[in-house]
View 1 (cartoon, rainbow, N blue to C red):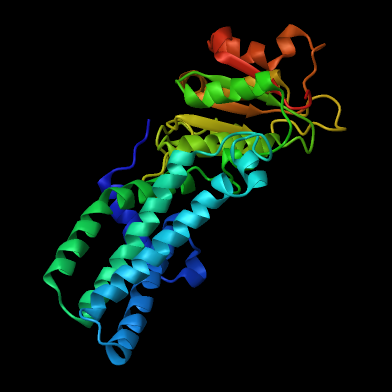
View 2 (view 1 turned 90 degrees about the horizontal axis):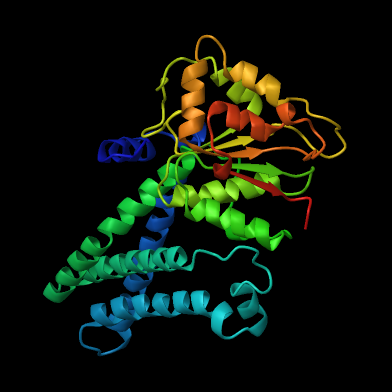
Length: 349
């Protein structure tokens, strides 16, 4: 499966730092860089201003240190308040945070904590850099170097993670914990098992009528996989039918580190059928298989589907459908074991 290399990261940095956003658009990686520059500035600018006040209005020794540590300390307290207040002080929010209220799926608290610590390091780098601008100090130089070294891995992790997210081509941004609709406990357990044991060849048939949240749920599951730095792809069924005729394993791509649907580790196939008041399948399992198994790329397509994990976003589930017309039968014909097929119906709560 596809991985993002240092070469890909440098190419993306070049794209983000050179060029005009007005006609090119803003990527997730660019937004993340801008966000961290904002954190740096929120440490740098207040430190400069407070230093000027302390230097002119007080007789404190080393006002540059007081300013830097005061600003950084204030941001640490703010982030602690922002992170811990819903968990510790507000009873209603505490219940939600623990999953008894708002959350259907628990937030990835470790991931959120890591993001908060990353922000705090950038606040500190800004404050320490401002302190050195005001007045050189050997201790502050050492402190700044330490912070820059500490932020090296978080920078690499978060920047490449944003690349994994933007290269998946999701139609919107959504964490799994933001999906808060009702779901049966057994279906919730099946989804968590699919996500936490994302081995190649696992398939989930996600049924639901219009408005059941099946597309949002599939994007949320895949997003969590992308954040774990897995190469995921989102594609609609109509587009995938066209891609079935491309015989290139790695077609030309323009985004650094990008991958095709065939060499992704997790694929979301959306809009296979609409569901709701539309009776029957617009795209049947038999039609899908006939196009998939075309003369030019049939074996390549079947091999790709068999070797990767896929979320199939379906319409309404019809238990009366003949066996040969069922999507489970299609997957078994491709060579996928029945034990690797999970069915989740969001209309049953």
